[in-house]
Image (cartoon, rainbow, N blue to C red):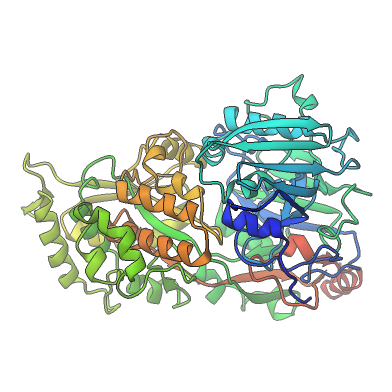
Amino acid sequence: MKKTVAPLVAILFMLGTGANAEPKTSYGLSPFGDLKYGPDFNHFDYVNPDAPKGGTIKLRDLDSFDTVNPFLLKGNPAVVNGDKGGDLYFNFTQLMTPSYDEPVAVYGLLAKSVTLDDQGQWVEFTLRPEARFHDDSPITAEDVAFTFSALKEKGHPRYGLLYRDIIAATVLDPQKIRFEFRKGALTRDLPYQVAVMPILSKASFETRDFAVTTMEPLLGSGPYELARVSPGRSITYERVKNHWAENLPVHRGRFNFDVIQVDYYRDRTIALEAFFAGEYDFREEFTSRSWATEYESKPAVKQGFIKQDVLEDAKLTGLQAFFMNSRRPPFDNIKAREAFGLLFDYEWTNRNLFYGLYDRLGSVFENSDMRATGLPSPAELDLLTPYKDLLPDAVFTEEFTPSRTDGSGNIRTQIRSALELFKQAGWTVQGKKLVNAAGQQMKVEFLLYEQSFTRVINPYVANLKRAGIDASVRVIDSASWQNRVREFDFDIVVRRFPQPQVPGVEQRDWWGSSSADVTGGLNIAGIQNPAVDALIEKIIEAQSRSELVTAARALDRVLMWNYYFIPQWYKSSHFIAYWDKFGRPASQKPGFDRAVLQSWWYDQTKAEELATRRGN
């Protein structure tokens, strides 16, 4: 499909304000650049609009769950281990829905149109009157307003942070709602944040409390309904027949399976063996050792029953790292944090544990042009220089690269350098122990919720012990792990933050001082840095792609050179495996999502042939 000229609303979304502009109405939003699809598009390019409906796909998730309310801080919610957005995109309707072959663009779903104020102070959505919840009650502007208030006031703290500059949701009529923004707020991202909000039924909460965990499904309105819940074991979604949005361009060719079933496994190894036995149909492989050594020898793979594929991924990869809790010693000292990074031997780990399948992360904006390279540009220096007295000199004089070894496992040089840094932080070696001025040995604990990751951490722990540190690994259940992380009761944890293609207000939650002490917040490293705060705001207020890139690169330098975390690894692709009973669109997958549950379908002929070949 040819690119079209963006409607003015997309430009307004990008600029935030316009001196001589007037409110404009459109079918889509995009923060920068053109919308790919014009107002008369029939379907997304990455789907087969004639894909058949039917069949079942079985997936797996790990550990367990104790609630099907995914909007709260409390509990361990059940979600689909599938495409971007998880079950929120299946069970609940949004005002607008993302296109996965554009970096950031949304098109009307519940909202048939969107209107932006000429000064960027409000956004209005006009709803489709045919939209319905699963009980056939209409979705109205009252439901949208209720959802906004419930999420912001009673939901997970992340919603309060995302919506803090949205001051009101005003119902104009049953099919029209206006969101008003705080005067002076940086409003570029706010229309998008509202547009992708999952919509709840106001009436359904007249007899139940929104703010409690529950195994009773919430009333939804999406293409799938949560039909069955086996507590802690499985969840089953069923496709809503004759769904109100089924023939809209944004849904045509998508959501083709009649049933999506997710089974939970306590153990990663057992889950893999269950896949080879045909207990479920599709998995993305995240363990490099399994991908490199455990597939090709299995009968189901040898006989072609199971197919493997590598899907390229154009997304900004995000950050996976060892996060150190800077709220407590020794991690409250930058020299100590830098020393911990020196003692992680990534090259040995990649060679011996990952079969060389990964690349080293060196940026919070990896796999994008927002990754800081070389020395700061003049535009970056304009942003960084006011905080020069607060920043490490290296921010201005060097390109950040993680510590590197020769991969042999011999890190004596790194240990010597780390001990010198620890000495500058007030720790010295006495009797093979690294101690502080009071003679107390440095003690750190890696907190995990799954046993399999210990094989990765144990070599790192051994290196820390060689430096005189009393290092250990503790594995606890997922619920306890979540509770401790929410309360910031840990030394080091492993987390991954998947960056959006256009970074914005979520950066406040991840790195901003205002979220450092918010229970359940995502600033788990405890970062409280005025330079970081200022650069986050520069990202949010960026009025062009070049301004965004400049601000992101500057933030990248400050975060990396302050050693708040030890970057791990990434790959710009998906390793997938599946039983050969599915159809896929002839077009390439969208660059910004693997879109399996969005665009694949159950192929009855293939399924019957597979059953015959297996002797079923």
